[in-house]
Image (tube, rainbow, N blue to C red; front, side):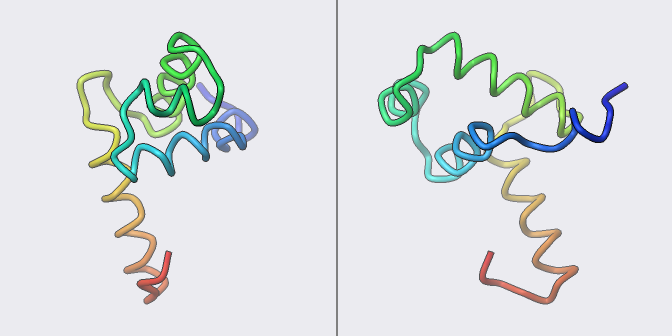
Length: 79
C-alpha cells in the first residue's frame, strides 16, 4: 500500500505528466528534462502506480480523464 507521501506526485513526475499531455514522446521528454530513457520509464511507472493503473493503460488518456473529473467537480475549465 502507498502511504500518503508516496501517493503525492513529486515535481519531476508532474513535469512528465505535463509533457505526456502535450503528446511528447519518450525521447522528447528525455531531451527536454535531460534524463535517460530508463529514468523517465521508471518515473512513468511510479506515476502509473500512484494512479492505480495497469502498465497497459494509456497514461495520457488516464491523465486527461482525471483532469476532466477535477474540472467537473470544481466547475472550472481552466486547469
